[in-house]
Image (cartoon, rainbow, N blue to C red; front, side, top):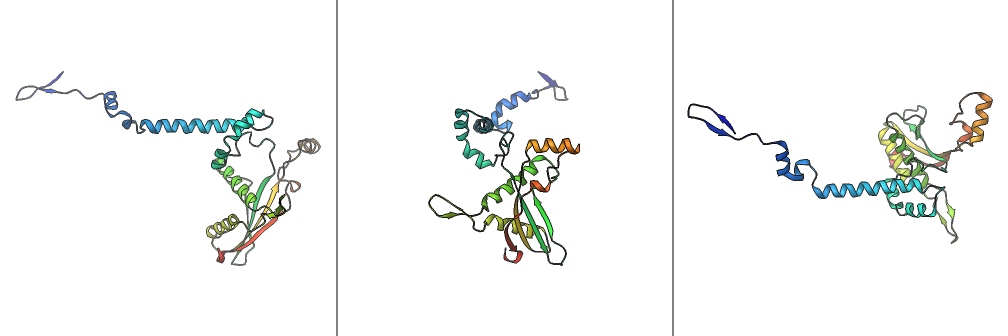
Length: 226
């Protein structure tokens, strides 16, 4: 035990408390995470990992058991919009592309915006976000189709398209209106890529015009009405 000398004699000084002792007194509160929060985070992480793994394994070719397990997490994939992860693109459909023409009040030529952009700066998740935005608009603006009941479904004006146009008007001062189009970026046949590469000796152009469908008009949206 340490002693401190002085004019009035010596007095006892308590030793400094060890960090381990302080942590043991405070319990989980000293770590910032109570026990119930740690348990909940562990359960959520296990649930998320199970959803990701089952979704990847459920992509064809897969067994019936793998597909059934993947179906159990359909709600999870839809909630997080995570249908774009690795292997989710097996047997991929064409990529939706949003084209926006911003009409200028000063009479200058229209400003053209493409979602997703051909080159998105920053982390890959930024491009992933643009892919999700384009896919959502494509799904909400599908042309009318007739079901087995004989009634037509879809084909109306998409509220999401109005939301996109409103955002473009707000973020681009001097814009009087926005015209939205949708097109699809087709996936080339591997044989076509191989043949073109052998003939030209150059890399295949993934943005060749033959791979882009004719833009489909979605609507004209004046900024004053949004």
